[in-house]
Amino acid sequence: MTNLFTRGIRAIRRDGPGGVLARLSRRTGQRTKRIFRERLLRPTQRISPYFYTALNRKLHGHDREIGKLVQAQALEIQRLSAGAAHRLFIDCGANEGAILRRYRTALPGFDFLGFEIQRDVIERARKVNPGTEIRHQAVAGTPGEVEVFLSEKSGLNVRGATSILRPEGTGTPAASYTVPAIRFSDLLAEQRAQGCDFIVVKMDIEGAEYQIIDDLHRVWSQTGTPLIDYLMIEFHPQRLDRPEDNARYEALLTEMGVIYSTWI
Image 1 (tube, rainbow, N blue to C red):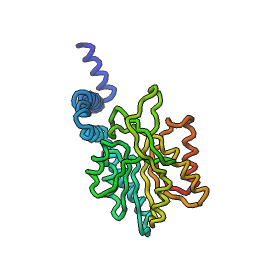
Image 2: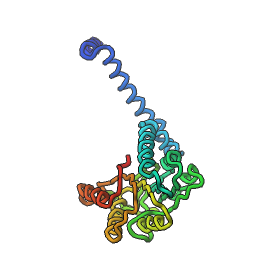
Image 3: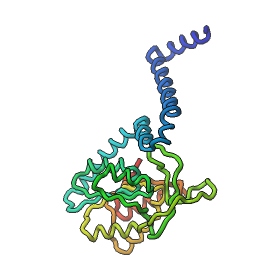
């Protein structure tokens, strides 16, 4: 007890009463958060992954961060698309639809289209985005049928690491099921032909973005026409053989004249 008292006196002298209280508050807050995650939050994942991810986002301040990002990007998109007659927003990797719903509110005057490969999640995305077409398809560099590798864990998204790419470091995992894949550049070209003169793409597809960028660059090299005007993208360099090659893909986007920003 004497030792504890002595340490307390030293701490007050060193940090002042306010500093000591702040440290105690941080430690107590961290302990409370840990108990909340382990005893209350994690069990809800088995009951309702949607409720779990919503609570998890709030607990980590992610909701607030996303809200600020969406508003900032929406202002920039509105500025860049001023004067466009037919504006389209495409969400690749819509997950449960929460982010798409935010952009639908922030970008009046846009048409919206979504893609999601998780078959049990897509109905939730459609429910929270009524009237919006959300396709149970993968976007890729080539068309065909692709395997879906479901992630076992949810965090800030429902099974957010789910991908059409085989996970690394897990032996030879079996695919959960297959979905049709479209060649994304073909879809974009069709939208251009139908009069879309400003196309925004949000892309969070767990590593499949690189094959799409390669294909978009091939099309651009042949036609000289960029198919995307504004791209919000989450890169996954860990999916590359050489993570440092991510810079090359950023250079390809710049060469094509695509304005892009990195997603969270």
